[in-house]
Length: 336
Image (cartoon, rainbow, N blue to C red; front, side):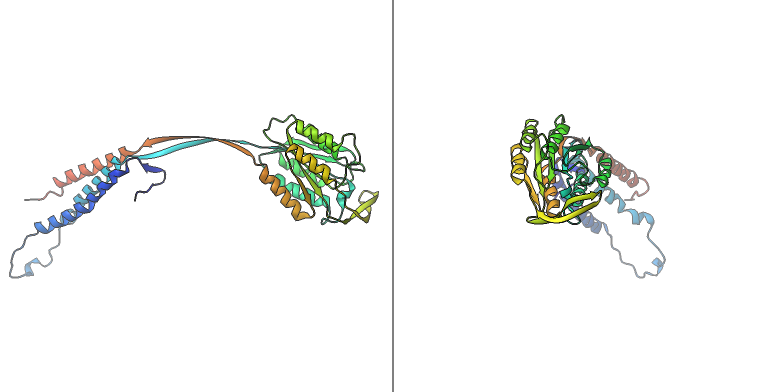
């Protein structure tokens, strides 16, 4: 029955029941007009031709309209219209994320189109675009490890580095342990409430001074969650087996070997999760799932205050009643 108008609400809605007076007043006014009409007999209407009603006679009903409006405004004022003013102090706190990516030659395998590395870079860039409030860093590893970009909120600079990432740029081999340990070193001193490493590799740890298990323990010690992604189809894949010169490789079908057990153990002990990506679509879904699990922290403070708005209505009602009173005894005065 009662509605809110924009941000206005009424604290004493029960006063609106008085609005039933309005139709009663209208009915009374119509009945009274009928009673005031007089009758007399006249032999001819010829003498009345051309005579029009005075504008005062046409405006006599305005007085009653003023009174109706004034009564309506008084009832609305009694209902105590209020507005609720509020503010929110929203604090957005991003998550610190380091992506540790394998760039060994095997990442050029053709079981992903055009190859594993190209797809991984494309999907990671999309992931970065979906995390505007996070600091994100990038670590690359092959036979050695290199921090391509420390934690940063300048995602444009970070994304501009991806076209220059080449497979085989960090010697032969797959140093998963080094890749994870370096990522931990880049994030361990972070003050963020949530610290995450996403490690992506398509092989088995075969070089490096630090084992994946040791690097996993290191991540756990510093409260870092590690999500491991094994990239590669099942069975055999067309993979580079020899490099003659930069960009010139000999390909052959070799077995896809991913150390899933080690990656699974690392993820489990750090509170993360292991995923296996066998094609581009599954890799996209994995990053979407990680994006959903690692939500940005938002704290919000609210404040509200109510302001009374009955006074404008009361003043408008007073003006209407005053106007009715003045017109009734001046311009629209009736003669008994």
